[in-house]
Image (cartoon, rainbow, N blue to C red):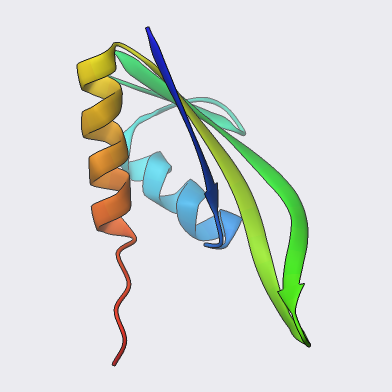
Length: 83
């Protein structure tokens, strides 16, 4: 069993939308994939000067290989680059 915690600055609604397509819904904040699950938690926004930065904690748990795959797919889906 493996657990990976990620603190993300991506808005909750974007993350939730991603997992609604990538996994089975268990509850408003929990999603189940193949041999892994993820729990989302909205945290208080952080900020830089006047710019609010949303904070969401993702906790992946499950079989080590499955968690690694799920985390990798999540990170690729939200990879952002400069224009």
